[in-house]
Structures are given as C-alpha cells and as structure tokens.
Length: 219
Image (tube, rainbow, N blue to C red):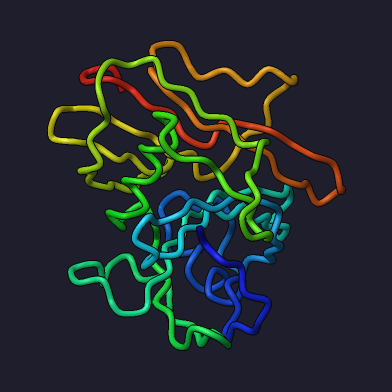
C-alpha cells in the first residue's frame, strides 16, 4: 500500500510539469508558459514498494480553451537506467529525500501495474488518501489471456502508444476529452479501457476515457 505523506516537495510537481509539458508532441498549448492546476487523478500500488505511481490530471488555462492533460508519473529513489529521455525532473521530498520523477509511460513498473488495473488484478487508489480505493476509476478487459507488461512507449501528437512484441497496443489519451453523457464506453474494436474523472476550471466534474487497449493488429 502506498503511503501518502503530508510534506513538502521542492520544486513542486506543477513546477516540474510547467517546464516539461511544452516539450511534448501532444501538448496543445502555444509558445507561452502553461498555467497549470491539479484537477484529479489516481494512484496505483507497486507491490515491491519501490516506485510511487500516480496518474495525474492537470488543466492548462493559458490558451483560448482550457485543456486537461493526463500525466502518468513514476517516482523513484534513484535514477532509472536507460530512461534519461523520460525524466520529468527531480524533487526534494520532505520525508523520502531526493526523488526522480519520470514520464510513467516509459517506466516498466507503471506500465505493468496499468496492465494489472485493466485486467482487474489491481485496484485504483485515491490520489490523496492512503489505503482508500478510488471507485470513480473504471477498468474493463474483454481480451483472452494475461496482458504482457513488456511495453515500449512511443509519443505522438495524439497521445502515447504502449506496444508489446505481440502487437497489443495500449493508447493513452494525453489531452482528455469529456464524455458527452454519463456513459463512458471504449471505442469500437477495443478489448479494454480505463476511464476516470477530473475537475474542470469551472468547478464541475468531467469524465472520460484515459486509456484504450487494442488487440494485435487492431490499433
């Protein structure tokens, strides 16, 4: 179980993301600095207790229309070998000391736990409270057999694709789209999905698809 520490972070997560987000191919803002606010998200537990896993939603209100971004983050107590390209930044945690924050799509532990969530082997946890399930996060899986956690991440303008050697593709929505009604369904042809909620700048709740899983040859 991940323990949520009430302590300080220097710099803060939003400080790191303010510098990092504009460098992403899926960022939809302009050339100016984004104006970010935390809008929601959830956590997953690492059974080994080594990696902090957070799926953060932030809203950017710097442009004509606010945009909500899904940012999976993996927090480690030491650098992840071979993942220099995925480093968001380092922070000083008031309890745990120096932490390395990575774009979680490129962290094998986060990818494995996301697959476990889709399969129903893991439970989404509240973003801010220890040992509290987040029941607003919905996952489904209609495929056959266990999912491989051996994903390779590729970023593009439409989001991030996690692919396996077998051809399975898990597409993460980076710029989130609110569902037009209360029914959140995965796209046609999908064999799994994850959906969740976040808060809009107006103070209302929005819901939408976070990730979609496709079988080999279907993405």
